Image (cartoon, rainbow, N blue to C red; front, side, top):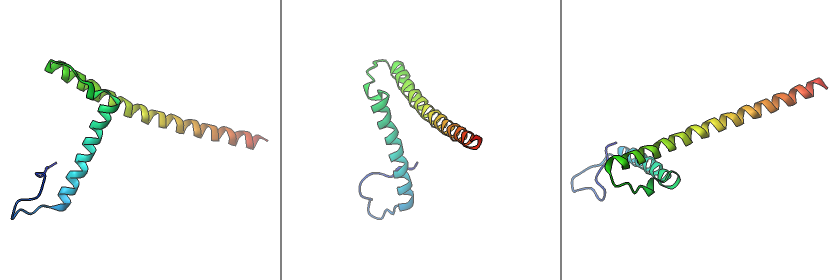
Length: 97
């Protein structure tokens, strides 16, 4: 990600608008992840004084975010499998009548 300087471009400087757009999209994605970490995992509440302790608290928050993502995927898979199983059971019941 090549981040250009914010503000107006200097005289004679030309910017690649396509690259700027891609960079902005990546920047928004990163900021969205940080907002989620602050809101849901307490990353905004880090009050550790020591550098090592703060690094561990941040690492645990990132781990919690990843676990939430995995949990969401597993719950979606479980819901899908349950729906398929219910449809299959209804099909068996209907065909046996």
